[in-house]
Image 1 (cartoon, rainbow, N blue to C red):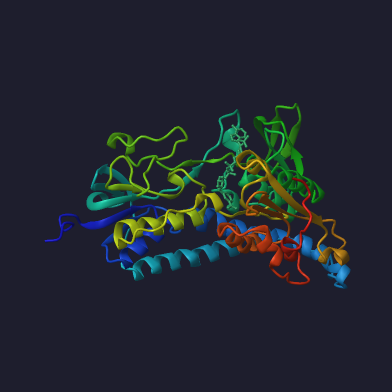
Image 2: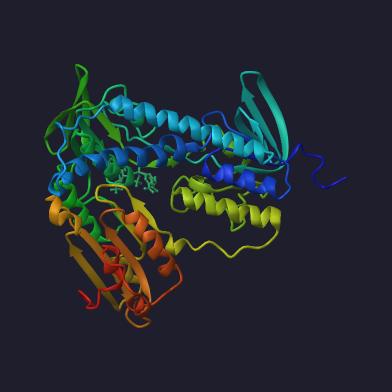
Length: 460
Ligand code: NDP
């Protein structure tokens, strides 16, 4: 009898989001008997209320600029372009249903048993599954917690009138006037999206400048570009209270202003989604940031209970959860000890308009960490906008360790910055030098060639 035969499964995954599904499929492919418990949609936040619908809505919002840009190239539209929210929303819903189906077939195809139930961990090897049929106990040699995150909204009078990123995609009516609270990824992305779709858009942020932690020049440049596109940015203020006003809302700000809008999005961060998992009773305590502590094998305080993705420390990003899932499976099932993940060079994009793409250190972080650096920077009008009439500009920036010549950071604000920085991230991850960048021949005419043609440091 194998050591695991006493358990119904080798691995029981809780949560069918990006990390959970990847771990379940890969573990099953490695020969483990795997089940996955999920009582909501398959694919988790990313597929259902995150990356996927957000990118679709961002495409929709970009058309606004494209229609304006086209005229300078000789195109005339028969009349002013109009936007129909319900078409976008319903087409998005159909696409997500298709993806949910793909996830189901992928799991089934991999031999993973799908358990449509809410899971509570009741012991090191036992899980209670609650569904319409009642409560059912199952056993597994290992249990993987992969329940991701959940939007968090601060408590203020009228905060119940806000929506979160879980609801924003499915609003019944298009908000002609839109307000978002927060200065992180979700706030700037949705400010750009609703502004592009035609809402009168306001972003409320409590600090001096949004996108705390990103390169300061990138933050300031993004602020200026968003203002040019018509987003109303309100910094150094917060929401004091929200009062319903007919079908709209009056949003009173701490700076004394009041905005009347049709929808308020709270984009004030996400918490690890641990509610109801039963962790406290098991003695698995959260750290000060509300995350589940794990070791390098993704083991919690109870070694048979594993956790990954947004539940644990590290950037809350789908590709990070996917990478952690692969590491976890290698460690526990294929037994080929992988190299540790490199969390220092994780590239990321913010799909505000224009997009931000970034990898490695900001100028400020590099000065602090390295000291002597060279900063190469360019700020230009893309060739497309010589005829489009658009005032949009592009920022590109390289941070170089002066002593070793290694490029330690690359940043961009501009069209398709995420697409471009993904390629640059390979070079930064590989530790290539500025000389390697300089010796790379540019592709002409592109904006991207600026990354290999910046010769004179803007500053040391
Ligand atoms: P973030 O943590 O990025 O930002 C939260 C924002 O809310 C911050 O600006 C914060 O201010 C502000 N805030 C927090 N508490 C309050 C409060 N009490 N009153 C007013 N403002 C407050 O969270 P998001 O919700 O934007 O996104 C969650 C995570 O999801 C991101 O960190 C990211 O990892 C991921 N994500 C990634 C995307 C991508 O890859 N493109 C897209 C969307 C999300 P302060 O800065 O002052 O702390």
